[in-house]
Image 1 (tube, helix red, strand yellow):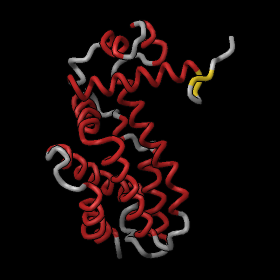
Image 2 (image 1 turned 30 degrees about the vertical axis):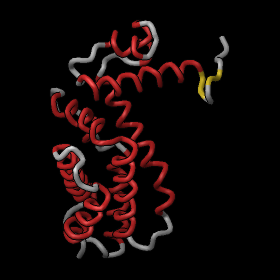
Image 3 (image 1 turned 180 degrees about the vertical axis):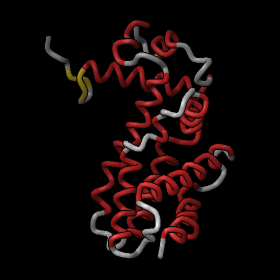
Image 4 (image 1 turned 45 degrees about the vertical axis):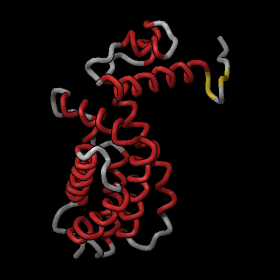
Length: 202
């Protein structure tokens, strides 16, 4: 059976996107727990059963959003290649990251994502998955800085990347708590320059 292209996507891709966007809209408006699958599909103009063609649970929507964020991070990595130092790469990556979170995701959606990951049982969560591009790319930059003697090598790059990303999550959480009341990009660049890079350098 052939697939009909709708707005540059296949029919299946379009349907999945409708469900995804509907879910995120309702999560922001009503809260994750209070939103039902029937409400998600109804809001998207679809039958309830269509949800299960693309997602098993509501939490799958959250996971999908984190992988979409990672896809963006992967797309900007080539822009950093020509920067001469690992510090400059970390600063520029942080800038792009925070611009995306501030202007595309927004604190309301980020609040939903964080709340879901905090409330989810267990420790196996996408937000801290070390296979995510967000983590592996920071590891790569730190390794580069260690090889050039720019960064300390008393700890391995994996551990330093874990600390770096943990600190960034703390900043994002603070932005959430304060309902986006400070400029995330400006604060992140200062935070990265003064605190994080200062800790990494030899």
